[in-house]
Length: 470
Image (cartoon, rainbow, N blue to C red):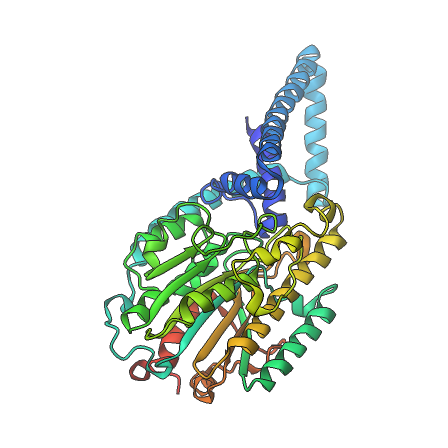
């Protein structure tokens, strides 16, 4: 049982490390099978997803059977010659001890050490659950009224945009850096011509390669949400989100979540006046594989449904742009904004390009399509500002998490870029004490904050009576 368990855990560790840059957690990761099944169904279809599930189940059963069969054969051999076996085992044990003390790296107890680490991690996780549940409601903002909040943003539309898989690795590692740097430089120049001012830095995400909702929750709640269990505790808490505080201060709060295609009761926690999702956003075009609709449609629909309304309060929108979500094919292209309509103009694009199975045969191909999807996202936002930007628009753009290590080539990077964009110099002056760097290309000296720090910093910077940094 121990050998079978260690083999299964090792396999789970290898998979989660390639996707999330961390070992498998027995407490927090039980939901990953269901999440993976939904993703595979969206990308490959229900039949293929079922086939993968059966293969995984058979693989796990085979590992356990092989462990049982191998140890059974060893037991038979040992019983066949008890005295010889005892002597051989003592000699082997003494030899191992000598090699271990001399520092030979092959004389190790890796399998046992991994079991011990998983056991310790499970105990720590259970302790973390109790501690987080006890502290999550300790929030000063939960009892504050909306009076005086965000007065330095009065009358402005604030768009908090999470860009899927937009990681710092794009700005620093090959094969991404040259092309992405050029795209950001072009974007910076174009926005500057539109009179926009920009500041940039980095944020540390609680996850890598997926589980985007943990990043959303960390930014908006001001709590560090690095597991599904913490997330579930958060949404049952009284902790105030940035969305709810904006609503209390007089803004209309909406969510633009094109990836939400199932019931989402957790959305009630955030304090939205309205949630746009895959089924009520008015998109009549074809999906781009897993991506339900391209980024340009999301921004166009939000403009039409919310910003162009007359006699409305200022808007605070949380937006998830998902065109840069795997499988990164086909790559969408910009169309004239006045032709976006209900999205059917994108049908030809949705049927173009290579199939996911073709893209994912080679890591260089994966990385190339990933890079192109990020460039599309950035160009979409720049084009949106050119078309619809005005003095009352404030954009906070950030990555939700870096891509999986198998794509980025970096298993230690959890940082994502963050940009604040506005035409109003007072908005940029309000965050001058943050020391964020001018433009869209933060360098290695730029500040790096954990995502859970952003909520309180944002509130204090743009609320005069709570301002501490200046």
